[in-house]
Image (cartoon, rainbow, N blue to C red; front, side, top):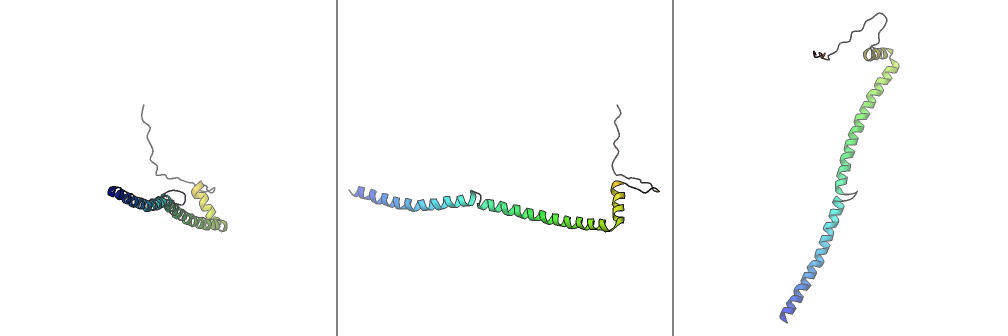
Length: 114
């Protein structure tokens, strides 16, 4: 009978430990789900933060470019010499009494002899 009593005591202690252990397992699994699975997980939050930082940098670059382009455009509206300068540099336009020479740094490729 003493052995049967020891088994009962051991099984009751084991059930108490298992009862406490199920809460630990539940908390650990819940933490893993919150931390690594789903749209609002910790990993997704880190990815979103990096994306936001990258996009803010792009916004700053585009704002600077917009300001520079706006300044150039207002300069073009007010200064006819600026329009003439762009026409000469980009489109090789000229007046009647001048010649244009285009200098290039491109290497001339020789054709191989047959």
